[in-house]
Image (cartoon, rainbow, N blue to C red; front, side):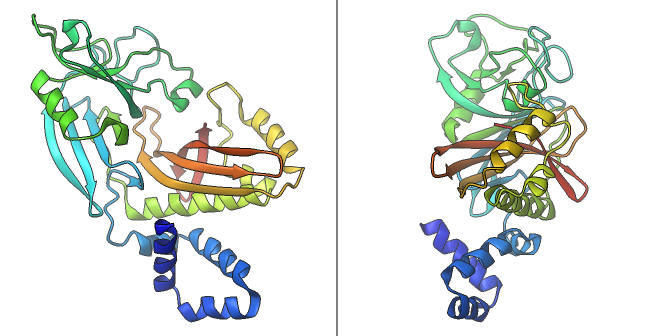
Length: 320
């Protein structure tokens, strides 16, 4: 509720209040809502909204911490989103997989490249892994769409009773004191982990405005069952984690949209994460809470989109 009120205040400050009052007076509250939804689909609105917001490491409405692991420089950095800025809390040295490059197969000794969640903390491990480990969700939805394999990618410590090599089998390893410091300075379930092979390129406000306006335009096309507009947001390379490709997805959506059902679709807690990758693409991972309801179906859960920013176009590469 507070976020809705804040958003309305921002919109009223951005556009003339008299315009909305006039629309309400002559056409009613539903037309005011339609006009607000139109504004959310414009880059101009989001440029104004983000005017004083740092988006270098993404846009976050629920995540509070960003961990950036750079395999090239062998450094890991922790940032906290605070007062619309990213505050750097620490920089530490790290080691990663023995082999360079992105992880694709089980046992290839490579650390994956991408954006990941930290899902849990493991203790009572073999002393080789130090005091504890933080588990990533590799392979994520996009990894699976690319048929990447492997598992057990952690951030862990160093052996308690012996020395070890200056590389891992694919995990990220820190000195034990540094691992403890990292964990104490953040909540792992409010964090995102970016793993790159080079410095993560800062996101611009113009790019983030494009992505935010895209979310609302895509949602609107979905809501009104505009098949052509909706499918135009999807890359012909689109593939789900379960293997469903663009052609199969298109056939399914055309069938669903042909019903012309009234739909309620709302997204909250929007997080837009820069997505390092080995495909030479400008990518973002979008994670949102989704409310979807028709007369016969209700879904409340998480929506993930993996998108490519290609010039002025945004294309969805995978979703979950």
